[in-house]
Image (cartoon, rainbow, N blue to C red; front, side, top):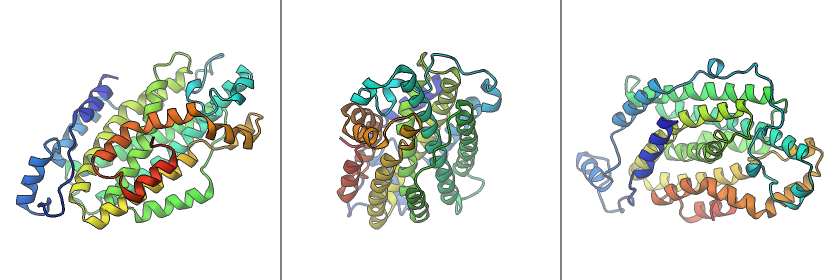
Amino acid sequence: MTAAHETEATATRDELRPEPGPDEPRADDERGIQLLRDALGPLRDREQVARRLLEASAKHSFDPEKDLDWDAPAEDGRWFWPPELVSLYDTPLWRRMSEEQRMDLARHEAASLASLGIWFEIILMQLLVRHIYDKSVTSDHVRYALTEIADECRHSMMFAKMIQKGGAPAYPVPRVYHNVARLLKTVSTTPGSFAATLLGEEILDWMQRLTFPDERVQTLVRGVTRIHVVEEARHVRYAREELRRQMVTSPRWERELTRLTAGEAARVFSVCFVNPQVYENVGLDRREAVAQVRASGHRREVMQSGAKRLTDFLDDIGVMRGTGRRLWKASGLLA
């Protein structure tokens, strides 16, 4: 876990400053690039960032097929997801549920979140391919993007296998949001793509950082989340560095569109986070459960805590403005 923590700490230490004003030179010519670097000291050269991430990938990558014990049976009395992260935790309905029913709900929610993760990673892979399509195929920037795509392929297969081992069904997102995402990933700008990438990665990453050290949780689930945390730290770094660059160098219309699409992505994400079918599948009344989750102060705090590091970052670099910010507020992810 040292590599993941070091990568996260490096990103956290980066001091973000506001983007240049409309009359200041941008990174469109040599003079603008120099001023950009002076104004945003931590903004590193693309190739330098990619080389460091490639080095980290070479040292700290996993093969889930070999590195996890898929043949081990589920452990009696252990959770598939920490109870505090289960959507109904600390609600009146939760207090009426038996311990067995609570653990069963955690198992189904773990499957729902893994299904959501696969959906996001498939979208992310498409966005990364679009990002590198016109770039030099011999650059380290492109080479790292391809490395990340390979990581995401393994992650998606790992999540799918974890769902199967847990015995709960896969939980696809509702068809309407599946199609909304189809549109968003088609029209998304480059900065919009990286903003959506961070949305899909950082909140789940926050939850997984609480999961893998938790000895109450199934060993297999802890192993899956540990692998994802270590490798995802590099993905977050790549996306943050590129989004910062794009929000400084992109034209005004593209930055405005990014603010809107990121806000809409946050709204869709919050709606799809847990498939409400999980409640019916453990014998609960779906409407009552959904209503109690929406009214839960604990759940609101969990979601906003999970999103805080991301929303602070997006605010610093100018994404959380205007209508986009209002969409983030409506999503419940922004306090």
